[in-house]
Length: 315
Length: 309
Image (cartoon, rainbow over all chains, first blue to last red; front, side, top):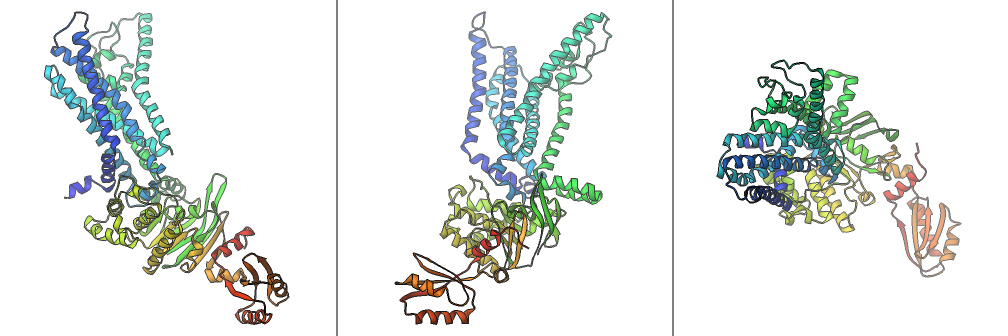
């Protein structure tokens, strides 16, 4: 069939085989589900038996709470998993000395980079889907709609794609896997932590300025600081759960409840990081064959039109 | 088939290649000789489209390696000096992967891969995981991989490095077969001396410069690599050496525990006269033998004095 040929190119085929044949993969699925299961069980234990008011009923509100906890825990697990799985895809081939042979085949740079990314993402998707039974605990008690669950999983996919693209990019930029992994974790740290801290920091300053100036708040006004939280996955995910969250984020304390958010946080997250993903993949594709990149430089100085044409074919 | 004009490669201030020019006809087996770090691998990487030259032109089958790398890749089979394999793949899957990467349809590959495995004597290892193969087998599998898309040109960087003598001989036999198939082969190798009979031309490279290039015989005669005659006697070795020193065309005589080594510049007629002479001295001679001067001698001769025009 043609479509399967188009979808499963040799690189993906090989990556799938290698991935599923290693014991490590099965082990990581197991450990991941165990970790998330432990969090779920711990949560139930903590709230049902250790509450201040003694043993309690597990009601839908509680299960909603648990859904949030699980979702954030999963987000953190993904943040740890994605760089480790993607930052080595190119550099490990270089270290194992298989890359040069792969690069002399007819596979285009884009095919190689994207196939490797898709294969890593598929594996992560498998792991995340494997945690669905843990989520079924939530459904047992209600309080969460399937739509919320689906949107959260789509959000996970996007975060994996983001961290994965950065991982692949650093994997082509750095010769050694370990360096690529560390730098990708660094980038993850900026996305996950620094954006949140910056939000808190600037929100504090803005609040202070507002109190000092003593001016009444114009209805419908909002603070630019809210945009910062839109760059944070946790903030974006929160706005998925709770539509009014975006408004609260953009609103200054004492502001009018009518002031609307200029943009939903999750939407901002998708838009901004889509650009980042595209850029990261572009850099990765340009960099995987050193010849292609340098050739372009040389060509531009020599004969620009032809150079771009060939560079296009190359990719 | 392969044209290289004034090819240079700089890494920062280090000149890896200086103005190398080379022309290799179709069907030629070209031996690339030179000490480590001389620029052999750099030249081969450039031909394999993995590296861009700082200046100069390299063409394979008429296609410039920087302008039309995709066309070049179709025509070359490249075997790097160091390479890894995907451990979790079986030999056939390994070849299937590369075959597919060259866009060969599966039906065709099903036919082709058993033939390739047979060519490199790995038919019995078809379903073995690649990581359990010996080094020599991996080397041969990699050679089969180079051939999967039936390229006209083979670029083999040290295909026999790290192989035991038996594996080297096997590799050499395969290369002979490839030569018969009409492939153009560029080979840099430690086994070059052993390859002497199958290499048509050699290029000697040192410090990024081509110091000698041409047909093996031409280079040998140009350098006037002298004959070495090895004479083994039962006794009176020193006396023989003494007498030989006064003979015509004998440039030097050395003795060691294996016998007398005579460096001789005369031709075959003069050599036979020398043999008669030696026999007439009635020293008990066990053997009188012309030692083969091989590529290794040529190589040492060329590179000992540094670059030579």
